[in-house]
Length: 317
Length: 299
Image 1 (cartoon, rainbow over the protein chains, first blue to last red):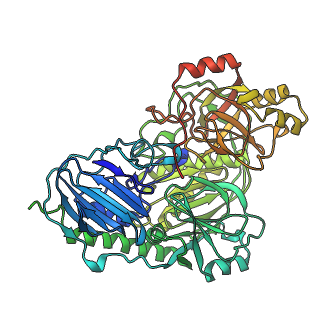
Image 2 (image 1 turned 45 degrees about the vertical axis):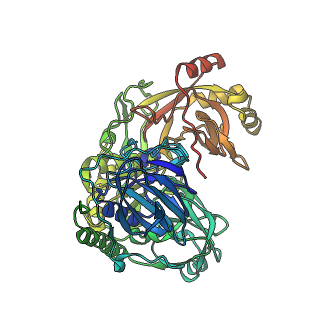
Image 3 (image 1 turned 120 degrees about the vertical axis):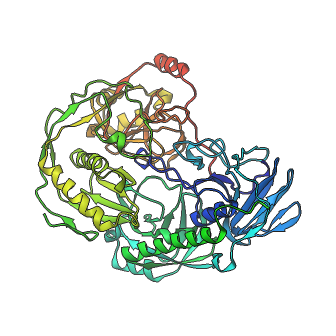
């Protein structure tokens, strides 16, 4: 597969690089793990396969061999040799066909999966790109025009288009509610700061990337300064800098951080922030550990149900 | 000891212990199995020598508290300051959790003063995890099992263009540059944690006489191998990256090299000593290796 136009920021991602946080290596992986997982299911891939994460502007890709591809996530108005291919669908690709993706009209990130997976080498057990250290993915960097991506050998060559049932397609509203578990340093904030955090809408700014989303809204005041002795962070953690602005850390977040963390977005809600655009409103809602675990279970069950609906592999004729 | 089951609740109990660290030329016990999915990626015999710095007893103190980073992250916090005795407890608990809890935990992340334990709450409920960790905490205080550590020697070329802030640090500390170098090379450091960029060691144990504040504005690009001071910490930049630490030296060693089968030079809990080398030796050693890893084109 040849990259004709790279889009705005297109990187190869999988489920992330696990096991190396203690050595300072971020998890990375798809910003929206749900859309990434559905793209793989649609394409008939195992959950470990790598996809291309497209950001805001999709780009164009020419398939040098017959393939079977799937799109999930943001709506980027894809066309295959000029014929419309919707998001949340999988479709056969003739040899030499060009898949073109435009600007996202809904959501931010779209995942392009190809049956067989994007077969770049593993680095520390993952194909995810981590650009800050120039590792993983395709040469450790975002895709550029002219890059030729290897596709994994596929056991069968599916023929039929298939779509995700409409009721299972997530909507990406411009106002999102993120459930949070308080801590680990919520005791570092004033009661007024805490009530601002839980009671006010915050707007997504243009200062967002794969490391984190900076939001703006009423200042979240600390009791005794924003600095802490650095400790470990995970994607979802919300750190508050000295200015009182919250930053929701995401997939490429550093492994340790020196700002107090007021709360963490629960895993089940993390995909929502990955699809939030500049100007979108974010509200934080406190929840219990038990509720976070229930939500995680429901998210996994939803994915299992999608897998059951689609069947183990795409139809071959 | 009462079992604390809620976040933020404190673990009370007898928590003082004396610890004698013995030396070893292998990885710390448990470290190789810290994260089961990882292959052996830390060189076992690089620049190792006996570590005689920790023969005196280390007093471990304070109670631990439990906190959460989301539903998958349990934080066991031993304090809120940079303190080698606190950090030693963190590493001891990290080894105990890794070796005793096996696949009940996904990953453990030691930091200066706390241990992050990542688990799958659908497979191992938080309550059970806390119940499993509590006795390990209690053992930290009652057992005097020796902890082994590696000692890694890092050659460093101080001053001039490789250490552009050496003059500032000397002026700030009212010492001669030679004294800064002697004091920086005179201590044995502990890799308290790694982070910021892959393989970046936060080294504790620096002489407070050479402490210096960070730059007011970080440099946009600090070369790989740069050795810096920030407050009472010292550290090494593994890859070229932005940075605000005062750079006093550079090492020709590659701290992180993704092209190697063993990309990381250092692991949590390792001991480190710096050895001054001349510019000629720096150039020769750099030339004998390949290029240092560089920063990717990230936005």
